[in-house]
Picture 1: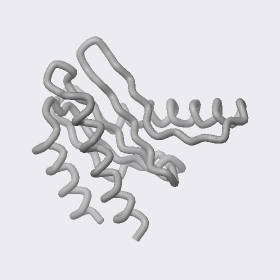
Picture 2: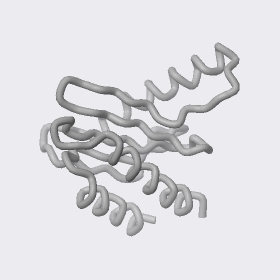
Picture 3: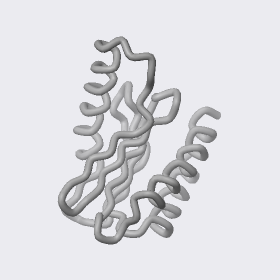
Length: 126
């Protein structure tokens, strides 16, 4: 699996303009399967641990509201960055991606992330 995740990071680095950081984190344990950053002062594993709390809070809100739905992704727009927390249907883990908003195209970034998510689902469930 580590070779697959290394290829995933390499593909993200090559295909997503403005990449700041990316990680794949298991929701139940908080274990980070892979992480990468383009900025030395940005810790994707620390960011993922805080974003895990965001995911858990949103899942609790959905349950409390008795909504028959699931989280596809969570988009956080900062003044100079876009952060996407993307969950697969089984919601066992999430992909966290941070990009520079002046260099990234949100639509293209989300489309590429959706493609990568399908590949990761296939690999992590095998």
